[in-house]
Length: 179
Image (cartoon, rainbow, N blue to C red; front, side, top):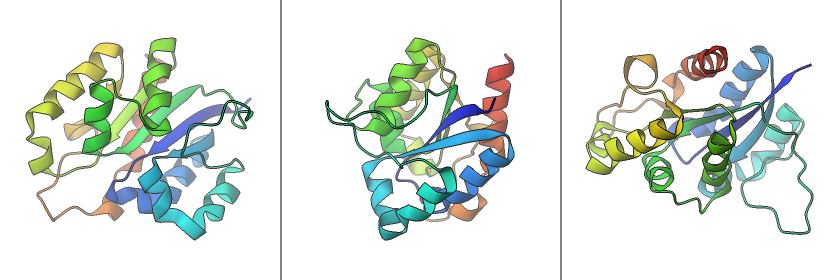
């Protein structure tokens, strides 16, 4: 039986190439359900059907309405990658105003393994709220992959979204499941 990974992408540069991450997760044996923040979903716009075909599921970017049935299977694990600075700080403060934050913020407190890997520059990372938010997520059991084991912040205006280490993110999920 295939395990289900909720792959959650935020409005950070590598999300324009999230299909690369999805394919890597599928090659790693995951049945992938893709959730995008509203801003990230707008980046894919008319190309969203490519992601639907790739995963075999609707790509979710908003909370469902009360009368709508959930079309995604239950998650065995969640990966929030790339995680923007905005998402990190909202999530760390307990603000779940988007599905991309609400799902993992609830799941981690329901025993679902949750891993997150950021993508933002060093100037954003220097904000005091970032360290507090990372600490708050780790206190709840979220594995935050930053630094040498994940994503190391880049200098402002010098990020390379094509070089985002999807493999490190997926390795972090494997380690979390094995722990």
